[in-house]
Amino acid sequence: MIVVMKNEATKEEIDNVKALIKELGYTPHPIEGILRTVIGVVGDDRGKPHHAEVLRQSNGVDKVVPIEQPYKLASREVQGSTSPVKVAGTIVGDNNISVIAGPCSVENEEQLMTIAKAVKAAGATMLRGGAFKPRTSPYSFQGLGKEGLKLLAAAREETGLPIVTELMDPDDIELLEEYADVLQIGARNSQNYALLKLVGKSKKAVLLKRGMSTTINEFLMCAEYILSEGNPNVILCERGIRTFETATRNTFDLNAIPVLKEKTHLPVFADPSHGTGYWQYVTSMSLAAIAAGADGLAIEVHNQPEIAVSDGGQSLKPEKFEDLMHRAAPVANAIGRTI
Image (cartoon, rainbow, N blue to C red; front, side, top):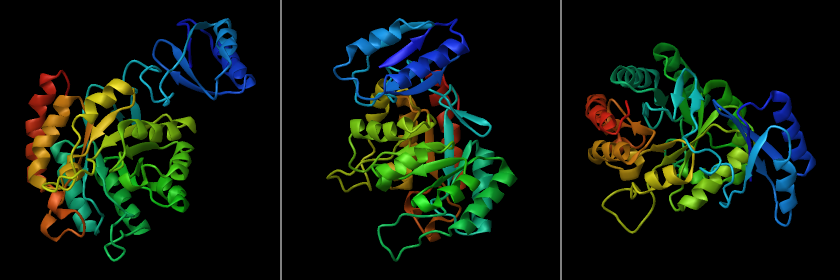
């Protein structure tokens, strides 16, 4: 259930309600809006309908609303509009469509700086790059590790772009928190619940990618693990699912974008690079994702994709990325947004 406070509720009244929630055996998760505060009440309330009435009678409470969905904090019942997520100097989930761009893997300083400057000039709002890489084969390039993070930090210093990079090992979280602005949880770890709980305790924003065989409800429950640990800064990312189709690397589930926008208040991104696996389809699916309501895009860009150590075939060259950004602007404008 959620407790909706009155517009004029004082801080003392809000604190008293949070204390009462704890006294009743639940965990309070306050969401502070512009006009009022909403408090998510997390815990097993089966057989305890009187608890809702106890909370309803507290000073400053407007109403208590039951949440039917299993994903309590991620549900749009908690908040009717998209919850903005602050990432350094940028806001994710507002009227402006955010764009994460950069190479799949950080390879060397020249490669990363060239790409970072190019995507910044084209209008990207965040820089992506893998320092630790999950690979299907143990013999494939696994990333530069800490050296890669240092290069990303240098690129941020040069361009001002916040960094998005993937966390794979729980032991690396303090290292990544030192360098990254957004912690990415990749598709292979989307249901690694211990890892989700760990980033839930972090103060960093989290980009959560959908697992390749994860249903939408399961995906939202993955987000719930993070939210339930106290981190409200979760961004969802549709990146394609595994089906019988072999013409593309994955099947980009465009349906997921409006469905997620209906079910959750969390910002929703689209990753057409992984979603299709082929660079020539990335622009068209990016435009479709914007039209479908995506709050942001995650695009792989490489200056020399033919020699990239990972995912070169799905990476746009900088000039193609610039063209995508030009073509995306009128689509965003058509639905009342900017990019």
